[in-house]
Image (cartoon, rainbow, N blue to C red; front, top):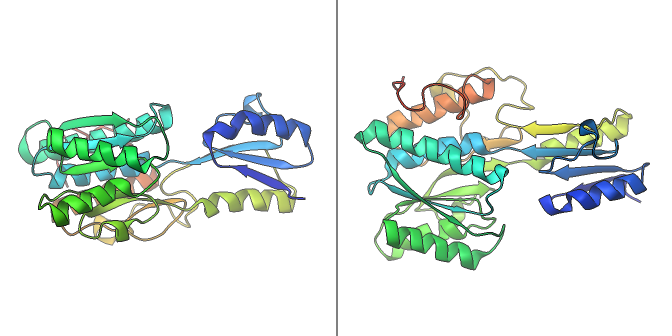
Length: 280
């Protein structure tokens, strides 16, 4: 008897489009897909939405490049599909920029594809291999568990090798209190509420919502770095708290870019300043 069906995996997309055609009096929302009525390849009672974290992955890269002592960072990734590739690339841009500014050298990055969204065993093996083989002391991950952060915590507390990790989608600080650098946190409720309201008010349209930093906030104006809301819940996606191990000048740079991205003044892939703009 439901009015709205939400599919939360990429693999549900085609099936949802078929069901939407079979049940024209119901509404369907697919997360992280490309089929919507506005594109002409799904019924008008189906919409798609996503919360994009690539902007914060760039900021996580800045954090990584600012703290690495070995000059090597590892990335544990899921599938080589666009939604993940842009996360990898954003992180790599940020890490390279920060490390180059610090040392004048190129950072070393290695990537392991898991070919699965969730597999703690594979994620653990990948994380260990990156630490042992390239001496990575910062690990990024898009696998849907806290495993990589837990491995970083294990190396930090039990093996005497300081290693950093990040939150992924939820605040995972408790899984690595000695190794948690920062991370990205999403709030899907902000997106779902838009579709609940559309159904309740009879204003449904087939749309593609691509939420990013700054969306659904009372104000998108960039605050000065010293007044940044980094670390505070806001909108559909926000940044976890910054570890004090991140040098002060890089904390300010992360906050500056975070605020600029909320207002649309900076983008990791299209803005100038990833390589040679001085920190202000």
